[in-house]
Image (cartoon, rainbow, N blue to C red):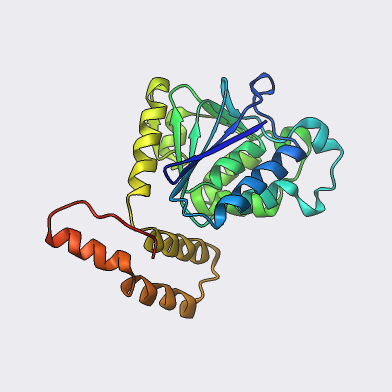
Length: 247
């Protein structure tokens, strides 16, 4: 159910199981992680994660919920891989999102949703204690009070509530999703990748309370000594668009 392609330094991953609202099983989680691992060492400037059909993702396939050892959550491993991917990631939510699909979307750096979509995490209705790593991921991005609404009340949030609480960076008409996503990915691809990747790493570490100041300083020094920094300054002087090489 995982379709992937890499073109012009922009990767695109599509969840393609529309008849099941793109519920992800263990094989799909492994496949998605494998794609990200394969792309991690390439000069990928942005990755788009989206779905096919009416929903983005309905979470983990029910058979795998019942028959998997969740003491070492495969969903957490997948979401960590998405969050820690070196280049920025965009979740293009083509429709509503449920359960573990919410955490998968939250693992991306940016989220673009469509009008009419909803978000619903029914763990409490099924007697399930959601993984604390996933709870922490949502608290980091949306705050503790929104997490209470999502996990404790099992509240359905509509498109406007999702924009208001910060889950969505952009809310667009369905026929504008592809255009808006392309514009954002192309903007990211045109920026200096060494600087963007370094700052993404710092954002992750700061949000987790694990910032390595010495490593961050090395990233700053490396960016200032890079060919991309020289190119950015030259482009500014010459009043032209810069061309970055990731070096």
